[in-house]
Length: 104
Image 1: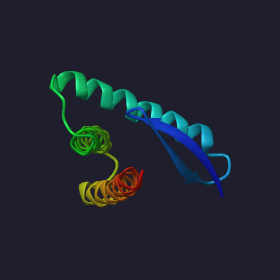
Image 2: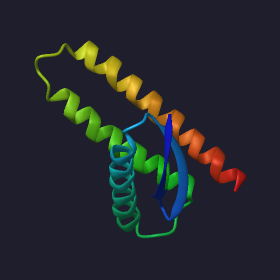
Image 3: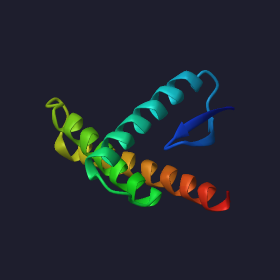
Image 4: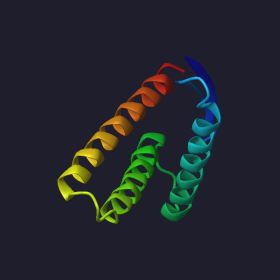
């Protein structure tokens, strides 16, 4: 097990990951941070960090949903199960980030 420090919304978070996955996780964090900045700019007014993370998560989940729906070789039910699993994992990650942020 390894860990990498990522920055999202100007805050650094130590994240555990499998050995060799550090660069991939860093790229994912950059993607999330960029999407978050785009959403913050689109909102055009200050919002709480929690709300901004939820909105960003929903936009990314929507992107993931669109990608899954474009895969015609898989039954829709399998896509829903994967989407639900991905959303559940994302929700768990967000909850962990929020908990760490509350402690800091």
